[in-house]
Length: 169
Ligand code: 4NP
Image (cartoon, rainbow, N blue to C red; front, side, top):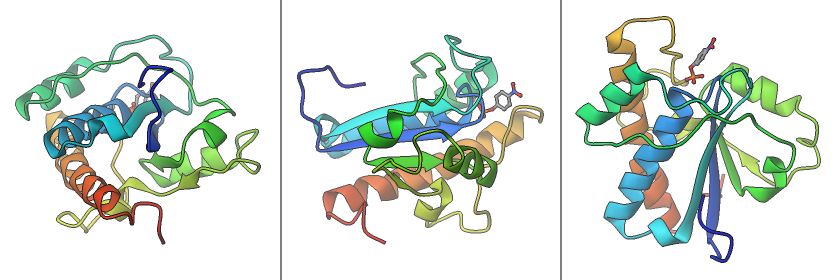
């Protein structure tokens, strides 16, 4: 999260189930892309899970290894989504449809102002899936697929932020 005194132009929250694989990777990939694009100071980035059982935990070691292979250092600790997130963020980006369902049923979601948009709606290179598949119970290739999708979508998020269309359609 950006520090409390800074005024971020756009607050983006990535969401998955456990907040130890996909969404912390999305946050860290987004941070790296934003830094490269010179927009890191304009964004407040965070991630959360719909379940709380991994609360406080570091990202999964398999995910951290896959991210490292792409030059991404994984930082952060798992936390569960909270009702305030639906008003404190401008854009909430879930990884799959079950995340969307869980978020829509969350207390405070209906009153929230955040726009909800599935991550893969931002992907332009990898368009044959509309979800970032849960890699938790699978093999190493699943974590590479996650990274492929995240790098693709985060590039597009950065471009849309820069051209002012991120919250449109
Ligand atoms: P994530 O992956 O939602 O991408 O963080 C998972 C992490 C934990 C579990 C499932 C998926 N779990 O069942 O504990």
